[in-house]
Length: 338
Image (cartoon, rainbow, N blue to C red; front, side, top):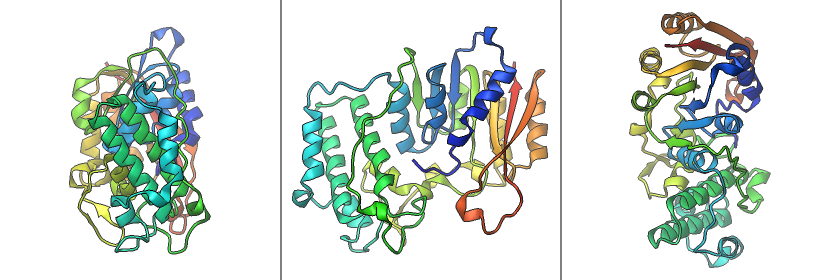
């Protein structure tokens, strides 16, 4: 899944920093990813550690429950799942026109072009069916999260967007003509009691503990919910009030202080101060709203003996390429904290 700030290309670098600074004999068991996003970092380390994950976005929580908390694909004992889903994917002409169709396809009043009419109807009917199955106890909560994750994962592959859902394209992208397909998730079994959360990280940090915590906070003023509002609405399927040309949902309770220059430094310090983990890794952008100098000073003030900073080349987000010419780096810091 395309995602702003995704660390997919930095996974080896994160692992390198850990291996260079933490000895094999230190009995490190727990890895916390408190800004989990699409879960790529946690998935990468799941085969090595017990995972604690968290994100403020609900669609991320569904992915966490599916990829990280459980260790194998749900059995769906009360359903012939493949047959049921195939029915909804192949009979789009008989499907009802729901919230996604009416608000995010050309079939709706506003004629928004996020999804084709056919794919929008498929998403509506799948989501309605999943909710119905949960209510009727045909599926349990883990099975529900897994099914929702299938749709969330599938949607970007048929969406008419440049990269995020902050806007749809005026002309149809070729991916928009593809038919929605649900593909099984690749779930790693680490035989551990992994745990996922959907909370403000500064509240959660006071109740969790472990060995390594990885911090990957937003580094600029670009809030995540407006850029992924459609995935959030598909995951929640709660008929929200929406507004504007893009049909964005209300997100006052999902704004991150890390995206606000006035609050970001205090929010990060609170997170580090209240962290009950032996090692803290922090990823941050060289052009982030907290300066490199301030980051170093803050981290050193909470470190015991270890402070290291690594600088890795990183590609610029497409929308920023025209205005920024300096080279961009990802800064990965590690400290030990008693």
